[in-house]
Image (cartoon, rainbow, N blue to C red; front, side):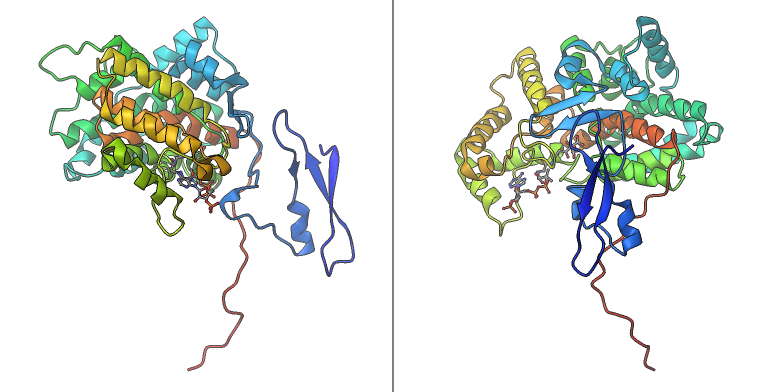
Length: 425
Ligand code: SDX
């Protein structure tokens, strides 16, 4: 219930408009603007910079302090003490699992990692050089053609089964995109490996010998999955919620999230960071690129920098930077030229007035690409891995949306087109 009120006066309206104000457990209060429609008014907020589109209990971000909580737990503590599947359980259920619950959850996910053999045929329709995100949009949506037994969105058990299936199958589909691109046979999942080891096996294993995952790389892979798991109402998650509000099936909704994530302003940034670092090529070229990023006439932006919400360090970037150092040390490539350029670029940008004034800091994508490249993953697979990781966030928000009474999302507009006019023959 509202414990406070906002009062709005509008030129031309006699009455003061009273609007309820709600407080959450954390974060800014929200003004309920729904009564405005009755006064013939809309709010106007392109890009939803100041709009709370829903109520949620899953994740909280404090952009000013650089805080990210999943179920109340700071991302730094989860990255240090938890793992991806445990965070999946937390995001879906709101609580960390007991040891028994975790064992059951992990075992259930393991039993859903295979895909229907007919799904393999979808890949053959693509060119070998198709961008793997184009394939992922297609095959994730195609899952809805195979699971008619769990598409009742109002059935909590069906929603839970869909979540298991999506968490389990995304690594299998992602690895298939890579194998297809290099003309290698698809690798079946292995139940003797953990989630991250299994993904690396499906990516880099082959039928001729047993794949032995490097434990340091597998741990880094799991941490990358964990750090990308959820991020409240970002563009792709909001897309999934909006698609879900029409009653579309969960696989189609997740496919819409994959599509929205692909853009370089969002999940495509990790691929764009590596492309940018390769384009910079040498530390001597950094000042020119910094000037281009600051030039309002130049569309170039510093990929991996800035964020709609964070006006401080992205807490995920800090963990990612530490993981990057660990992986490169393990592989004996501490002097990776890309890492040197990235660190110098970060140092210069953080001292530059343009970036300081606008509170532009490295975000989650700035270092992740360097780790993924070091693990041997091709650049065009980076956003696929982001989609794999974020699937739990998407399906958790989709499920939360359908767990209580809801309405189809249908924003309005400020119309500035022609007024009514008659058709003249
Ligand atoms: C993700 O929302 C999420 O939570 C997303 C995400 C998640 O986990 O889901 O965190 C994942 O998408 C991270 C962001 C990855 N994208 C990039 O790294 C691409 C580069 N960043 C920018 O495109 C930009 O910072 C955005 C898109 C991330 C945020 O854009 P906003 O909030 O619309 O900010 P803005 O464009 O209004 O920028 C404010 C000012 C502008 O300058 P002025 O008009 O005030 O002069 O800052 C400038 C911008 O030009 N600016 C940059 C910049 N980012 C913003 N200038 C140079 N380089 C940049 N990277």
